[in-house]
Image (cartoon, rainbow, N blue to C red; front, side):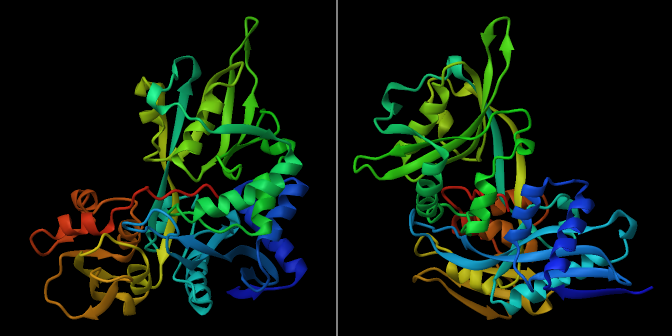
Length: 416
C-alpha cells in the first residue's frame, strides 16, 4: 500500500503523532512528560505519514526566534523567526522507505510558508541529517570540576550576592532573566509558556536518581536579577563522608559578575565533591580559577543542527565587524534557487547582500557548511582543512574567518 502524508490538526491525531514519535525513539514517557511534549506543538504544524489508516511517522515545526551573532555588538543581538523541527520519528516497521525524506521536504515547505529563514533541532543521528544539508550551529562542552581544588584567583572573586529560591518564586523570577540573557547569546531561542513548563518539569522519572530541582538567583547592585542557576544533587556517601555531585541544569548569566558568582555558589556548596554542567565551548570558567586543570572537559557534542532556507536573510541580518566584505559561492541541492554567488558587504549596518554571477569567489561551500560558518560555530579555515570549504581567491579563508567570527560562541540551553 502506498504511503500518504498530510498535516494533522485534530486532538486525536496529535496525540497519536506524539505516541508515534515516542515509540520511534524507543521511549515510554510518563503522563506528565507526554502532555508537556504534546502541548509544545501547535495544531496544523504537525505532519503525519500514513500506511493505510495507520500513522507510522510524525514530525512538527514549532515557531521560535533565534538569536544571531552580533559582530561588534554584545547585547540586543539580531534575531530571526525560525522553526524548531522536533519529535521526528518513523516506526521501526517502516524505516528506509523514504518517509524521513518526505518529512524533510515538508519541513522546508512549512517553514518557508510561515516566513521562517531556517529550521533546526537536536538530531538523534547527526550523519543522517547531514544528508539533507543541515549543518551543526551549536556545540556544547560537558565539564566536571573538583570542588576541593577550585579556588578562584583573587582578582576573580565576585561581589554579587546569590539568593536561594523556592519553586514558586523561581517560576515568576527566572523567565525575565532568561529573556534578557538570550538577547545576548547567539544560538539561543525564545521560550513559550509550554517550553517553560518543560524546563521547570521535575517529575521523578526525569531526575535519574538525583534530587528534585533547586533554584538560586544572582542579584546585582540594583537588586535586579542578573542570572540564575537550577541544579540537582546526586547523593554519594563514601565511608561516612559525603561525595555528592551537583548537576547544573541551567546556569544563565547576563553579566560577567553574575556568571562568576553563580559558579562560586555551586563550587562552594557543602558536601559536594564535584560539579558537572553543560557549558558553551568558550565559557570563561577556567580563566576564573587558580588551577585551570580542575575544569575537565568530559565531552564536546554537536548540540543543534540547522537547515538554512534563506541564506540572504541570514547573511544580511547577523552582525559583523565593520568594514568587511566577502564573496561566496553556494551550492544547495535541495533548493537550487539558493545556489549561486553572493557578495556580503558589511560597510553599512545592516549588511548588504547581493546575488551575482562571479567567475571566482573568496570561498565556495554547501548550504549546510554555510549554516555552520554564518552562525559562528566553526571557522572557515578549520572547515577548509576538513575539505568542506574551498578557497577560490587568495586570502578568502582569512577574510571569511574575520567575517563570521562569533564572540561569544553560539550556545543553546533550551531543550529543543
